[in-house]
Length: 186
Image (cartoon, rainbow, N blue to C red; front, side, top):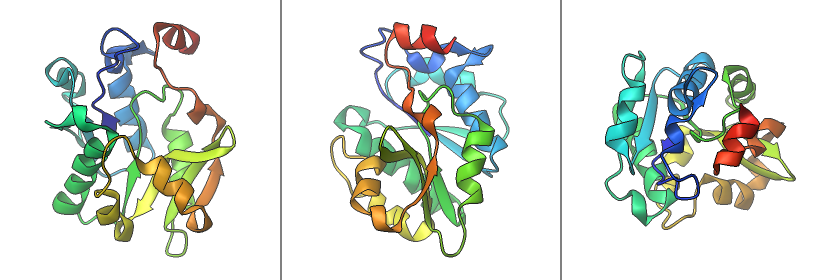
């Protein structure tokens, strides 16, 4: 899960916004576990020391820090995927964003259900695009660690649309960027 951003439009760490009685970052990590993830790596950057305690005592969740978070989204994606590659034998990686507040375990389970030996990339589709959350087969993870700047998994998905199994997930279109967004979710 990518949660390293500075929340500059929000004004404080949006990862700590309370949603349904818990910090957004914790709620999002628990959603991945509920969908069947065996381990969740949460990539932190800006405000890592403030955010990490929200993840304590959640079995199966590890906070990892991206020291180069300012260099763009791609560096956080690489840090998270490198953890999956190096520390697990997982057949794939579910890439999620901490600020997609309406994504829950049942939404992520729809992506997991579509992933198998012949459907190796499964992504959500919303607002006419494909993007994250998305599940990538292990064979694609190394390539996804090579991006630079703000290029992320969404750009890769759109460039490889022919091999992507698309799952309609309209709720993925709402992410929290501003206090107004947070009030809409509440």
